[in-house]
Amino acid sequence: MTMLNLLRRCQRGAAAVEFALAVPILIVMIYGIFQVGLLYEANAGMQHALGEGARYATLYDRTTTSKVPTDTAIKARMTATLFGKNDGTFTVSDPANSTGYKTLTITYTRTMSFLLVPGPSVTLTRSKRVYTVV
Image 1: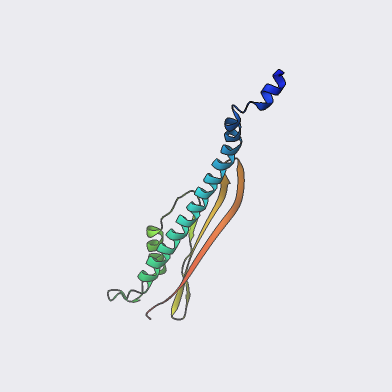
Image 2: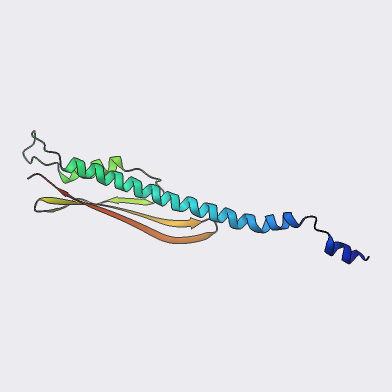
């Protein structure tokens, strides 16, 4: 047998070559799953902050003349209870007033990253309408 035939039949190192080809793809996929998980965490934080802001907006305050918490106080409460990874931009807008209700809105903007490949910019927006005591 010639040396070339011996090299063709030898399978030593084939697993190492397959591993070297598969691992970078696997790492990028795992990192992408982690990035999507961060979006889910931000979404949960936004929902929590909206719930706290809505609960606070419906409180009836007997000690003040307006009887309803101010928009600044509602926004401060939502900002204080907001959680999530702070690598994006959270924006808590002032509650929009209308007759008998307020609309609370939180926006989260983040540019995705998949290691060496830049991803799209993702914007999550959540709103909640709160009926207030007048």
